[in-house]
Length: 120
Length: 295
Image (tube, rainbow over all chains, first blue to last red; front, side):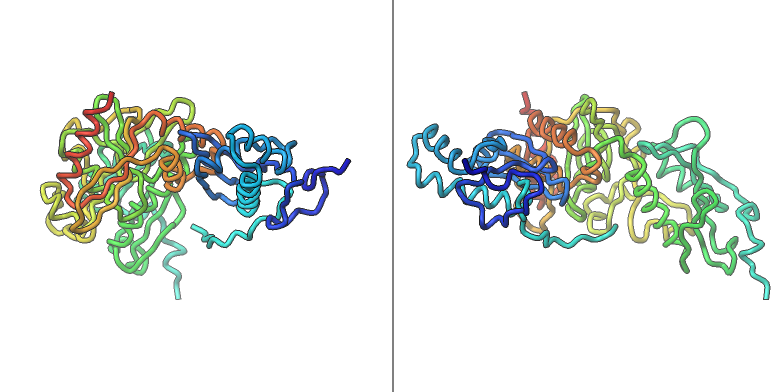
């Protein structure tokens, strides 16, 4: 059986754009989150950045348990919401790549932090 | 050539006035000066921070007449922290330094860049970036009968969610002087320069009972002054409110996950708005209406 990518300790980080259906997304411990009125707010302790997810992305983010692959999650959400599996697969993949780009996933090479940091 | 500063010391200054011990959140200090008129002014603007006892730290304002090379200076305890050609700059720096010390030394609180007022134990918070009208809005609400919490830093106790007042003098910029003309602070003759670039308005000078006690947030409105704009109070989603609060926190990283829960619980418990201010009186009426309509 093939081990899901991106879950093993010591593995090279996966560039966020290469995340595929067999990737097993796990939320970084530095990505603190809270759900409020169906929307997730995330504070990235490492980059001191804050993100708010829309309701759809919030459902996907809240479903990441560190042991379910993107493909499995797509199937589960498609069934739960009565939606077409291919469409859901695309949406989940786009969302997970976006989480990876924003430095929210362990084992993923995020986009560089381009914000200007100044000393005060 | 003799180095004057090598032999000069703070004990050489004929101090004539020291404020009471002042406590601003976790910062405990007093300020001394060799100018009696300036001393009276400091007593007025810091009066709402006065507490009994001896201060932990002492600022010394050294005016040109008593400074080496006539270069005015500011000391905190024995350390020189600022010198400038003009004494007004030194006094300005003192006020800035105090605010900074309060924020740096009060990290047990989650601190928001926000003004706030209070009525019957309920706090209205006005978080926003600089130059958004926070101070003017707080002043308008105090004039409308509410009590003053702060115009700079809202301090929230993480364990309880209670807001603890930091009732410094309201720092009113020239752009609001005509709107708040009745708040113009008195100064002694010869010391008019103290109000030349900014008014420091003691809350006690507005009303004797103008300073709030600890209170619980019930309303959050992020203000933005826009000249000539229609004054509007628009609902803000609670998740957006949490983002806005984090972006306006001085020390969010210190509190991490607990701070996130604290702000989320605060947003859940509050009515949340964005406030566009074109007219101060209208903005105050809208906020009072929103406050009155809370369950």
